[in-house]
Length: 328
Image (cartoon, rainbow, N blue to C red; front, side):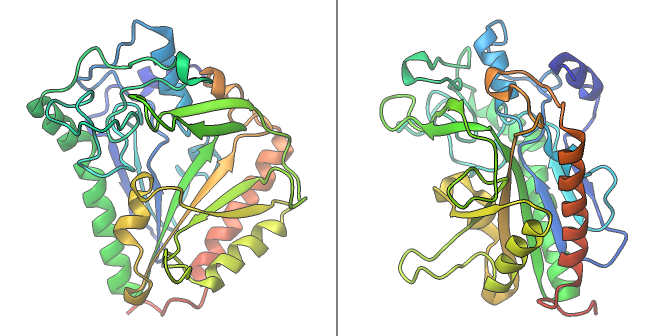
């Protein structure tokens, strides 16, 4: 699939946020915040005359996720996702998470890849360039939020509230993919926080010292070290389930609260709200050459089937877990 084909397939949409309610009983809310690639249908300041900007739009997209988890065929969860490219609006950031290079009057401290991206992805800090022709005015920014940001947050709020009311719990599953490459962020300078993508990772394995197939991201209290985003029972279920399919899950903590709006906004175990994120490592052709800005979905058929089977049974297991009560 080429980037141009994807864009032409979606650019006539009248809305960019998709919400599908479940047809079966489930407290699960599926969120895909970074799988969109649309940019032509909104007014933006991306300098698309440059190859490095066009590549960053693709490199920033978790484009394999809808296919891996079968989002278009699912009817066992609330499904919420955006068609807009993350480089236009990153809905996994706070509404004020932007700097003055992105929006007029923004923060003076750099937020290169915050709510509005203004820096390209590169392999070295010296190769990072600005993505925008000029900052958005306040009016332009608000117009962009009205079509690309606010509707998604309202949809998640509504789905979580309905699931909580019906089942006395709501489980938000925030789904991502990640480059099959070493990754880091710029630590200083005016491109602070921008992504750096390095050499390819070793193939995934069940060896605890090797590359995992999946990352599970949770949040812990900074003082007590207790998990505050989801229960120990849910974490153990996740790890055991995927291992049964020959897939290793490595747990890690959310690196920065500002990069995980879902955790910061919704996690509240005491109130019955559980949140976890997962990153599917783009090995075995799931996101071939993503780090080079290519939009290729050429997975090994057996590996794709193992992932799809694992996720299908995972959703059934989540629905049937006894951490929630029957629907009222």
